[in-house]
Length: 165
Image 1 (cartoon, rainbow, N blue to C red):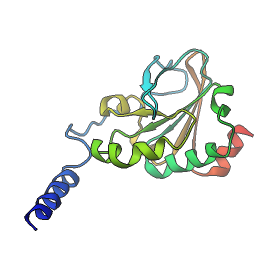
Image 2 (image 1 turned 180 degrees about the vertical axis):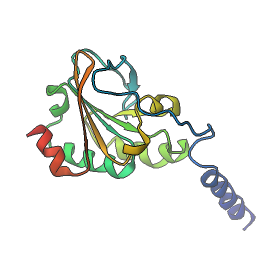
Image 3 (image 1 turned 30 degrees about the vertical axis):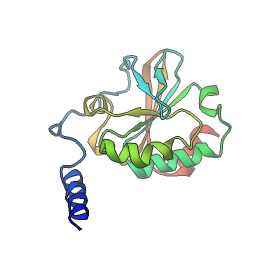
Image 4 (image 1 turned 60 degrees about the vertical axis):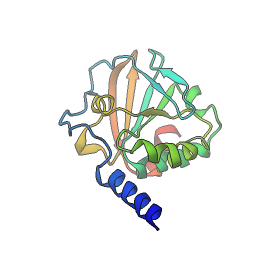
């Protein structure tokens, strides 16, 4: 019984401390039309590193679980090379997730998807992309030689279909 109490206490501490021990940052998203996105490297769900290149035509950014699921389900219906053939990168921010939750649950779920999902684990890296006002939306960033030519904010699978069809 004492062991169960210790486990419950441990879980309460994990969940009550929030997603990160880092202070909240008020940095707004740095991606803006007309600006150039600096190349960056992120690991995918299989821990394989990927680097943004000048060939990338589109970034799909998600910052919340619900929008991430929507995008993943859409791409699950497509051929495995669908993103690659369109020079498109799917980036999911998991920086707010406690690492124990990621390790125990989310990682295996993400690995069910065979296309690469670039993952942001770090709050500082997330701040380079995230705009707090739009974090509940799917952010579609159009690139030409890493220069942002357009940004669309969408919320539904139908809107995502219109982007690609």
